[in-house]
Length: 139
Image 1 (spheres, one colour):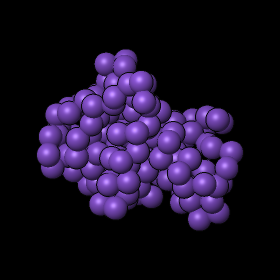
Image 2 (cartoon, one colour):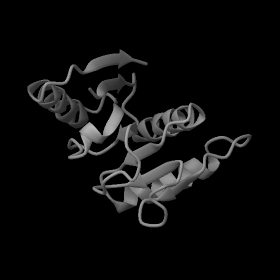
Image 3 (cartoon, helix red, strand yellow):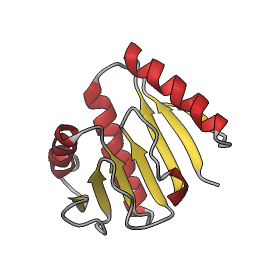
């Protein structure tokens, strides 16, 4: 069954979520996992693309937009299905992915923004209702 984790950041800055996504994508890729970063919209996809280019000066994180290369080591997209199964989904979208079962691991990144906390609490409940056992990880 897919492992679901909610990584909880201590601050409310949106850039913190994006940086955490980059760090997790880098770790996943280094461990041989295919990584799909699911954004809420195309603007967030573009912002994440820019951040991945500059995130680590000493190490490039190979990534592409889903529409350009769905088989890249790290894929940035929105509602597209993953090209590779059993990888890592980093979900920055406020909704659950319809493809959750195609991943071995799903990470939801939460910060202290009140609106996001409300959405993520509801997502936590939805995962439980669907038979998953989500875990909370304090960062």
